[in-house]
Image (cartoon, rainbow, N blue to C red; front, side, top):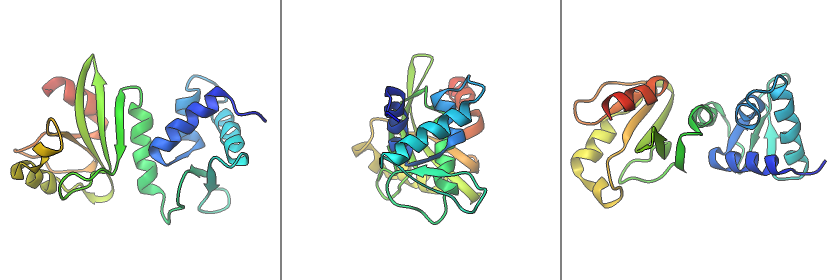
Length: 183
């Protein structure tokens, strides 16, 4: 099969997040199609056959994880980041995986646009336990972020978190509502 323009667009999305399932890809590729997951699986297989992506799965019967780069021992954290990307990719204007900000490394630093206003967010995907908000408070209070960023990011917690009296922290599920309400 030939690689299509849509395949290249899917590959661009995959390069941003490093890994995704066919179900995640289908929400980007063809969200309204009835057979969207089947279409996504077929297109990802073409990219795989062409050597542009690799695929693996945890066990027989599990969905394939399509990825670029190194194979990981556990995909849960990476796929949670991909879930966030898939949910908000239409609002994302800039996306950086694991940037170094002073002494911390958020999972993602992204610029998002909501109703023509742009916001800088730091996304933390958490599989178990709580998101460590204290490290962001320490970074804010140190002032070191001022040499790296134009504004301090809104911290978006992908999991349980504690409220902060120092910085803006919102939950992933209500991110757009919370940002619009409080800026």
